[in-house]
Image (cartoon, rainbow, N blue to C red):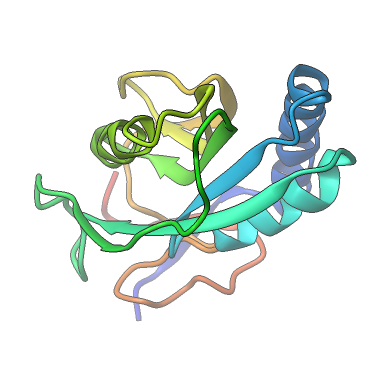
Length: 171
């Protein structure tokens, strides 16, 4: 088991999620948006975001991975579960736990655009400094270091932490 150092508290996360939910609700009040969570890491964030929206919306999931059990992206995104909802003319909010390199969000957004939605907006709880593009809805920015907790894992461990921590020695 890796040693972990605190990065964002439960309170930090809650404030960021509430702010993003309010922004999305304001922008999409008339749209009945479809939230598409990128599994597995986004499930905790998506649940809290959904509860905070206060407007009608739907949820679906896509599973995409580029990390496997390591700490570095393989550079290739593998889609292992596709969405099931018809995207035609829908307003989609693509929900990601962390936009680390931007690769996964870019690949998934391109895939969603093929379904001819009205719009695709990106939402990430965390953005790695220097990552592009910057999501329209962003929680917090992180510097170097491998982060875990609040749904984000390292080798399928640490997802259940209520806060976000950085793996010691990775900064």
